[in-house]
Image (cartoon, rainbow, N blue to C red):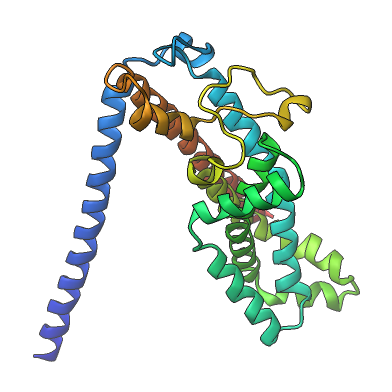
Amino acid sequence: MKIRKRNVQQWAGFFILRLAALVIVFILVFILYDIISKGHRVISWEFLLEKPRRGMTEGGIWPAIVGTFWVSLVTIVFSVPIGMFTAIYLNEYARQGRIVRLIRLAIRNLSGVPSIVYGLFGFALFTLYLNLGLSIISTGMTLGLLTLPWTITASEEALKTVPMSYREGALALGATKWQTIRSNVLPYAVPGMLTGTILGLARAAGETAPILFTGVAFFWPILPKFPVNLTQQFMALPYHLFIMSTQHHEIVKVRPLAYGTALVLIVLIIFMNTVAVWIRYRFRKKYKRA
């Protein structure tokens, strides 16, 4: 009787899990189908490579694509090194105790802070206090702060998956602490570190709230160039989509363009996620053979 009851409970548990997974997949497929079916009609070389014209009712989204690229690059440069080195210090060097636990708790809490709060903080710190103005640099550093907790957490969790015997073996052979980390820990932790980091950057690339206060513009056809125009305003795909979908004076006329912009943004995020999966696969394959 008990065995039969356990079997029923197991069947019910698996049924609920499968049902939840199917519901999520169905919602995702429905959203993608809606965007792709309505957005693919406007996708063309003109739409991708030209500047917008006539109040955004004609032309393309090339300045928004370029602006999103430069902001993402600044975000990577600012957040990835700091996040990874912080994770290495907390997991490999710091003496584990109450202070380190409080630091980890603070990092976990920061990952749950609403993105608009990061936008206001970035505006106060980078735009006003550091006098960087409304610019790509201010926006990229604000998004860097947004992704920093994700980068630290993902990197630290990846470091924890490396067996302690790898460290002990290298230390027993006379290697220094840093030599041990560089040769016996990082090669096996890098796939997880990079995967989590790229996923966090993909999330940042689609954020609208943080960039509202730090430099994004509704119409800025000047293409950013390194490094001069990184101190100027810019266009970005998330904000462009927001304006086209909710604030445009001819919202019905530009709705197809909004769907096209959404499709381009989704493709960009899917591409970044694919890169993360590919990096993980390549590193796993390389060190599995080793």
